[in-house]
Image 1 (cartoon, rainbow, N blue to C red):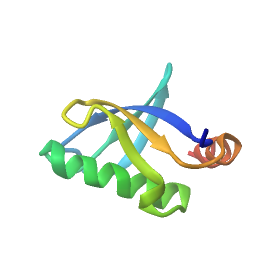
Image 2 (image 1 turned 90 degrees about the horizontal axis):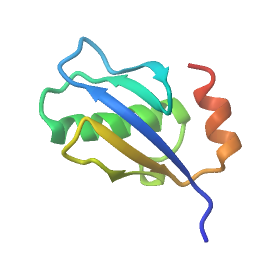
Image 3 (image 1 turned 180 degrees about the horizontal axis):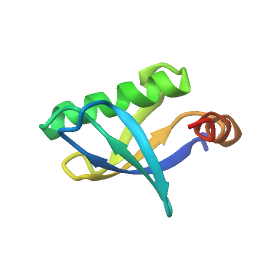
Image 4 (image 1 turned 120 degrees about the horizontal axis):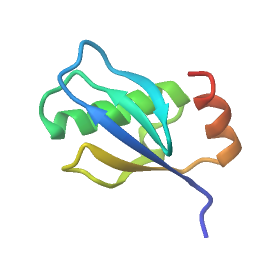
Length: 88
C-alpha cells in the first residue's frame, strides 16, 4: 500500500489572496481568490504544491471537488507534511 497523507480542508472563495488561514479541529481553513469551484480547486492544488515544495502530481483532491469541504491526498510521508505545515 502506498504511503500518503489525507488533509481535510475547508475553503472560502472570493478572498483577497490564497492562503492557509488557520487550523480548526481536524481541518485547515483555506482562503482562495477564485469564485468558481473549478478554479478554486486548481488554486488549492497550486497553493499546497508551493507551500509543501512538491510537484502538483503528488497532490489530488480525494473528496469534495464540488464542496467547500475537501479531502486532499498527498503522496508524501506524514512526517514531511507535518513539519512543512507546522511552519504555517
